[in-house]
Image 1 (cartoon, rainbow, N blue to C red):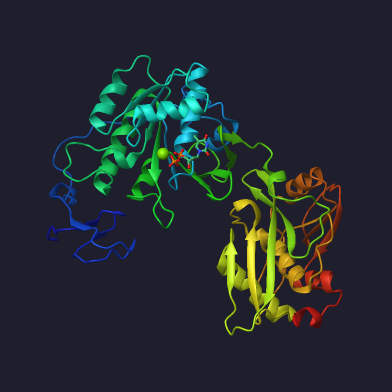
Image 2 (image 1 turned 90 degrees about the horizontal axis):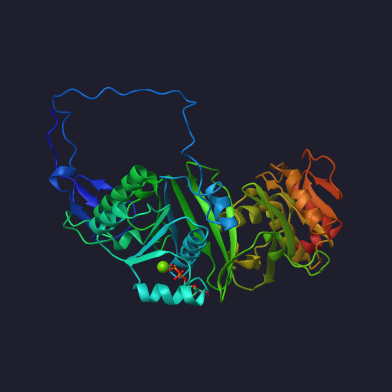
Length: 462
Ligand code: TYD
Ligand code: MG
């Protein structure tokens, strides 16, 4: 029979070990391992006793309870999949100061003004501070019930007794609340897990939707245990570049909607403003002609989004030239440079290469490959991308260009914004596009688009 062994749990990420060690292999933090409490060690098996018999229902059960509550912020509702499902739990993560508290304050105020009772509990700010922010945002008259609290027991007791029962409860943030039956400090794995469990149970029991704000660590994960992401129904990230005013709300998990939806906001002196037509923000006018810039017709969820990709290829005498990327994957850039070198004879070994996605946006689609290649070749050859043109397509290691999904939606959006030429993968199935289509099957064709020659010896010498 297996001996019951002591366990050590990382207080940062929740990984368990059989032996103590100084550094957690999973998250890389030092001194975070602690011996687990006896009750945390898994018991040998279920004790004797009969279980209750479950009643099974059909798939087409009554779903009238699932009438969603709208936040009345269109971009927020879109990311949620059409509003809050009653009884659901939502985790929203993001860097400090990115605007999570602002967004949620605006959401509860909107909902409260439209008649849905809301409670906002902050463990980080005093109620006066929140009132001051509400006054600055012009929301002070909204009938939101506000409290500053840290004890999960107090929070649960107050919400259970609240009349009317709130439609939405915001806890800002989950790392500041604690359960008094646990000895560990607020923010530790055990505390975050226990508090979240209580709040999720409260949500299920009362039909209130609960939003938990979670801090993000240096490497971009929600601090404390990843288990939090498994416990809640929906995980949203609020991201953006502090130097830019754009903020993106992204669903990474959603039991009640699509996960690739994004909501776009702009931070202004009057709080967050919705951007319902974001494409026009991230590109300059289609007829601008400078070398090193191309437009990528991307998709964010169900919505097409056009973004400008900027490349700069600068000669350098250094043996190991710099490569710097903002808003795209640096590994992918290295791959693309290698493909340009090997398959097209365009060497970047004597040049520094910089790549930037305009507006502080992060592009994750492989479909951006073609636009990146166009920006780089354009910069290397100092020949502008043809005016009014846009690019999308994935590039393979042999230099072949592969079709990507939703070509029609991308082209339609581009046509709306005044683009006249699309450079797209050969074999894309497009119907009724209102612009000139240039189909390309190999990266060489992109290179010759700029240099006019199939073997770009001129560009290679740049
Ligand atoms: P906040 O919502 O407190 O961020 P978080 O809760 O994610 O930590 O965001 C605060 C930042 O937003 C702060 O740097 C100031 C800025 N801000 C504005 O620019 N305009 C505004 O109207 C408000 C309320 C905040
Ligand atoms: Mg905050």
